[in-house]
Length: 419
Image (cartoon, rainbow, N blue to C red; front, side, top):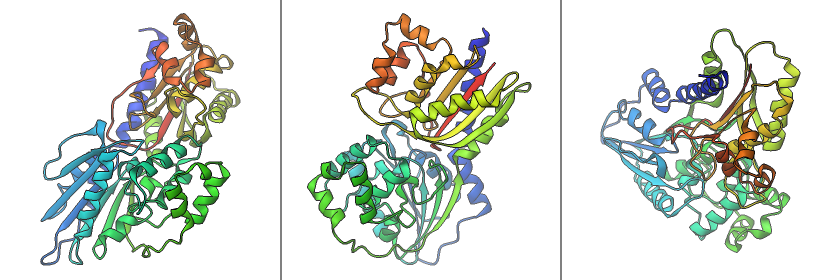
């Protein structure tokens, strides 16, 4: 194996360490072993619901610890379809909501609404839940929510701002799950895919108070110039008074995060290497993030083999019709500036859920020969990037990071390896 091949393999091992550290089953197990679920009062039963990309794994583990009788329902993305003994698992579209998600949200609301004061609800929340259970407020339609979601994904807004807007239009987001479960008590175990771990933003906060108000949503949408492009029903809803009941109190517990995965990557760096977590909040536009990564390598003036580790969730402004995602575009942008780095560098950027944008790739794995391979494949990198077609560009160099669905999600991780 060549030195370059060894470094590329190391980058992939570090990515796997990040994913393994976000194992949702292990996180649920550790929490419920130290905090056993309370016994039910006479006549009561447990309702266990799981929403997000880690739903099956979290639900499977939780059912080993929750006393019966139990009714369990999970909603995850189509690519993560799997059976869980004792539970119904529904699949839905992500990142764009679909009819299956619309139907799943109705099933979820019906189940929660059946809870009484003697029942207990355990909610297992992970990233991706926002799109998986769209549940539009009346009189909005699924098509309305899909249009809003598309505009938000193309806007360049960060995930917190997007989820603040989504909360105003949903029956389940921004504490909506608590409303539908009342009067039953609700405990939520949350796996964070949001940098900073604001529980109100993870899966759009179904078990916590909302991030903002309808007026704040209008201001954000107006600022990015898309309010007028919204469906008329959405504009009318945002301009009307929110008369929903106050959000009941819930018990929320964070059981996993991006920072834990970064620590695991650092621990997995082999002996003889220097390992540094440079930034655990890599956010903003991918062009700025790529520049930050390059500058970090230049400023640190590393001596000997070094692994520079980053984590966060960047954004992409969609200006073309190509396919890609924030991790693929970030990797491509680093490759385009890689001539500033020492010869022999390798860079990986990947989503811990195994999916980056509407593609089958988790991200990109590039090195100092990536541009040469693209040229040999007659790929016009600049034109592809201008069309947001990072997937095609990376595929030309055989530099796509493809892992399949991982069953977890704690945002994105990056590593720059310097020889």
